[in-house]
Image 1 (cartoon, rainbow, N blue to C red):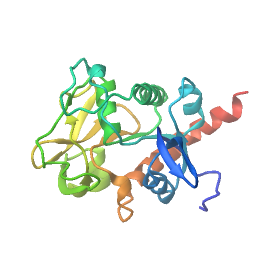
Image 2: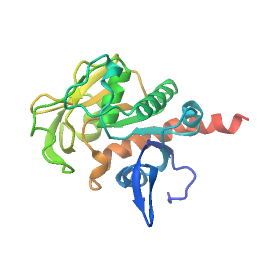
Image 3: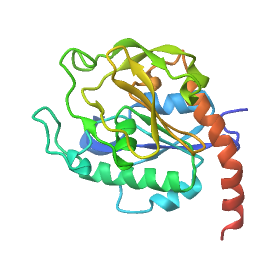
Image 4: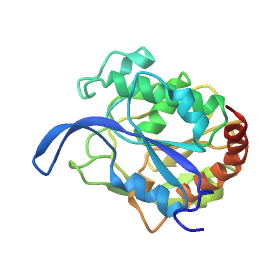
Length: 246
């Protein structure tokens, strides 16, 4: 399969808006780390960036075969009826709202979903769960812009264990974590200190969340490859829908 093969599934990646500089310009931009794009391409998909916008989530998901909810800033604690912790970052309402709509549209269509770090936390929150707003210092986030490497154990019989085996070493960078599980979610990965590192939604074709950053490890594409495999199955139905819908 070549990179211009039309059969490569279209994978939406949630992106965000921030100030950026290039050439002589310093402007507001819609962006996402290149590592997500590379991970989708490497696994056999075609990435489509999805920046926050007022509407159109359902229309977009009708055209896509899978969804990646990317990492980023803290989810607004008001979304799970909690007061903000002193260490919780400022809310990003436009991104929270947009990604919640993307997630809802994807789950309603049974499209494959992979939530990364913040994306896993949003999956939990949108299904009625809560978050620990600040983990002990020097545990899962040591210094700015440097990942923490540690091992996680994966539950027997889980989709994550099927893809990655009983344990794997991962790269983490987070100061929040899943607390109470959302409806239908199972915690299927944990670190040695008991922190939830992976979630799976029962009864769905492929809806996983991981607290680590698999997109940063080009030598281990297994999780993105699993997403692409599930998206190819989903895409056959989606392609028929797109061909028959005016």
